[in-house]
Length: 349
Image 1: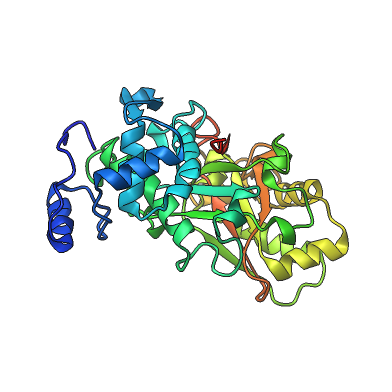
Image 2 (image 1 turned 120 degrees about the horizontal axis):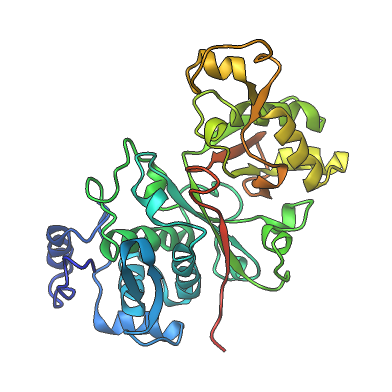
């Protein structure tokens, strides 16, 4: 729990009473939690061969050491099964990476989601959804793994609304946001292989994102019109990325994926096209007062892109096979603010 709340979980009573006691202590995300108990917490620890006091990682900006028991308790409260613990543990280690820069996205007024993207054999083994409703409800693994990270952020790091979490609006994704890449349906190498891992390895990628923007194109049979729609959504004038120029995650679902597959477009081509078209002129940005200064000659021909390079656009596949829908996820912050990190999921021998 937080440093301000060092009480142990309440002793077993009637489940409804325990749930209410947990609410009173401020240990929930607003939804009921599974009351933690010693045997259940131990099962979580056993699943990753850790002892309660073992250090998982440190958030330097918060001067906070995260121990295994805190991860186990919050995973249990979130509703995780013990076999989910390797994914949760890897995600917690990702939070602690300097490149992710926990303090920025966790405390900003921008209200970022902590998005977990799971790759490798563990995704189907744990039934982590990559298909229909991949971002939505109905899948225990998706819901509880993502929720475990948010509960840990609140209870172990005191990242609570109005305290350290200063989100102006927040998003529903702050409850939980975890999905798997649909590797079998992708025309490209999966994200973790692109990042240097072997196909048989399992990983989780952490991304500090703003709200999902859904992109629809029902008619396009070729990549260019489809990708122009995506680029336009990415470069809306109100986007943080158009001035922050951080990373961007683009998720193509089934029918759009098939358009790109049929045309034989590589991931590199997709990134390059999106980079070239996801932009705004300096004139547009100045008129909208997204950047300061008077409009000068040539501003209508000078452009700012939503990322600094094509490689900062992260392309992957997920979602249902039916429906001409895809999505883009703007990043929180600037390139120096937070970077995606991909962590190996270590399974006990």
